[in-house]
Structure formats: C-alpha cells, structure tokens
Amino acid sequence: MEFLSDASDMTMCDKQKIVVRGGKPLVGSLQIHGAKNAVLPMLAAGLLTEDGVSVSDCPHISDIDAMLALVGELGAKAERKGRNVIVYGRATRTCVSGQLASVMRSSMFMLGALLASLGEVKMPLPGGCDIGARPLDIHLDGLRKMGAICEFEDGELRCYAKALHGADIVMRYPSVGATENLLMCASLATGRTTLVNCAREPEIISLARCLRAMGANITGEGTSVMTVEGVRKLHGASASPCADRIVAGTVMAAVALAGGDVSMYGISPNLLSSVTDVFQAAGASVTCDSACMRVRSDADLRALSVSTAPFPLFPTDMQPQLMACLCYAKGVSFVRETVFENRFAHAEELSRLGARVVTGGDVACISSPEPLHPAVMSAKDLRGGAALVISALGIDGESEILNPHFIDRGYEDLPKLLRSLGADVTRQI
Image (cartoon, rainbow, N blue to C red; front, side, top):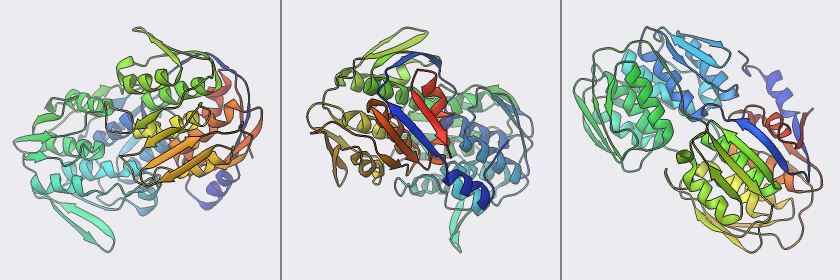
C-alpha cells in the first residue's frame, strides 16, 4: 500500500501533469470497478467487529489508500490482496489524526464507526475537496438523539456515549454521510432507530447490505425511510460494492464530447438513469441491456439547462463533467448547483479553453462563441479535475492539466483508462 505521507511525496505529485492531445474519438469497451463512495464506508464498518470483513472490487485510488492508513493508525488491520481488502480487529484508539483527516472527507465515517464500537471518538473536522462547507450538523443532531454527547474542544470534535439507544430521527436534508454514520451507530444501539428523509443513493444500499451481512437488522435501504433494530454484536462477512456510477458517467461525458462508440460493462442502468437522460438530451445515444451500457456520439452537442439534486436526480458529482461537455454545445446552457455552494472552481479553468463560462450564485452560464483552443488548466478538486481532462479531448492540440493528485482520489489511472479507448492522454513530470 502506498500513501503520501511526507512533503517530498507531495512535492513530486505537485510536479506531475496530465497531457491531453485531443481530436480523437473514443472507441472500445471497459469494465467499471467498485464505487469509491461505497467502498470507503464499508471499510469503516469493518471496525464494528473483531472478525474480518472482506470488501471486493476495491479500486486502486488514493482515497482507499488513505482509508487503509487510517484503519491501521487506529489500531486495526487492513490487508489488500489485488482488488480485495480485508479489515479485521476493532480499533483500539479513539483519536483520528489531523494529517489523515485533512486528506479526505471520508475520515468522517470514523465518527460512526468509533462511537459505535468504542463509545468515543475525537477528530478534527474532515478535509477533502474544497467544494463547500459540508457541515456535520445533520450527523451530530442524529447522534445526540441516540444518546451521544457531542462537543468541540480546541478545534476538534469529541463525541462520546456510555450507551447508544434507538431513536426516531428526521433528517432536514438527505445527507449521504450522515445516513451512513447513523446506520453504523444504529446497528449496535439498543432498540429501534428510524431514519426519515435519509439518503437513497446506491452507495447507501451497498453499506446496508454489508452491515446486514455482518448481522445487522436493517430494512428500507433505497427508500427515504430506513429502520434499524440494534443488535448486541456484529460478525465478519464478505461484501461487494455497487459499481462506480460517477466513473461510468465520466466516460459517458467523454464520449459525448469527443465522439465515438464505447461499451461499459458491470454498471446497472438504474444507477445512471438521470445522467443518461441528460446526455441523451444533449445529443448522445445511450442503449442498455442487462450486461452492457453502450454510448455513441457524433460530438454534435445541444445546449441544456440542468440542476443538480440528491439521488435519483442529476448528481452533483457529474456537474463538472457535464459543464465540460456544454462548452462544446450549440447555444447557451445553464447549470444550477444545489448541493454544494462552492462547486464551480472548474468554471474559470474551462474558460481558458476559450469557452464563455460565467457564474453567479448557484448558477453557471456556458457558451462557446468561437472554436476552443488548447490550454494549461489546474485541477482544484476531484471531479472538476476529471472534467478538465475530458474537456481537452475535443480539441486538436496539446493541453495540460496540473495537480492530477486530486483526480487520483477517485479515478484509477484516468489517463490509462482513456488511452484504452484510443485517446492520447499521458501523465508526465
């Protein structure tokens, strides 16, 4: 396992760049791996039992490496064998280090895992991409209703409870992270917990199935109301995550923009229905059967107006990639971001290609009065970085994307993936 642990490693990453020589259509096929956003909470759930919890099809990305490092730092063990990861042994420490918490937002899953297993957790506020405030108030409101005491001390969050009990919790917003933390705590709490207005994302279903395989009593996943009957202890299990719908959506965006014919395997159409609808409205063709999703495009895109929203509507994690495509569309497009208030950092970078991208409040207006040209762009976050890479696929000439370490958080060697489809994309120093 590799993890960026010192300044020299970070300096090396800062010097890297992704070089895109565009103008080639994408043709071929690929298998979609397990979802980052499903695997991370499943690995955290492994701390809820002394037994081994095996998670299959874990992608080789830096966020997974950081989670495995965090599991080890807390006193448990994590072992990767190919695409399978086994977490075994409860954590023995209740404090999450500032360094690992600052690397990724998913350190927040230790809030539920450690509180449920050890009765206490102390951690700095989680880091990750700078796309908005992403406060923990929904998490803490639910935990307090279950009997936890949550307080801030010297800039750190401390939660503790002698015993957690079931509760009726109405979430003011269907937060994915809060739903996952509350599921972990409710699984080992005394009595029944009902979560109302909880998140419905496929990654929630993966966690619920993992916890149920471990002995938890959970019903209602995939709906807005979930019920958990607490059990005394959980045991080891094997579980598989859903496929990564955002990786699949990113490929769909790349084909729509660059043109071509690509088949994706291992991804259920139900995971991407809202994304498929949007790209078909923009001019791409998407056909599906039980085994394959085929995307075809002649790179002749139409302008759209789209708003992001929680699942099953258009996901915020696909907003930057859609914006990259709309830079090539005929007419004027509007994108409204309703989930994160600071998720337009890629807009300024896309404008370097010659697109006219104007943001105001939660709305971006996109048009391209002239042909686009190559540019040097800088990734500011994970999905925005991926959008910059695919934005360069439709331009004859050489573009550069700096700070690719952001992209590595959620994509398993994006340049290699695109090369497998015929693109000219390399990583250089």
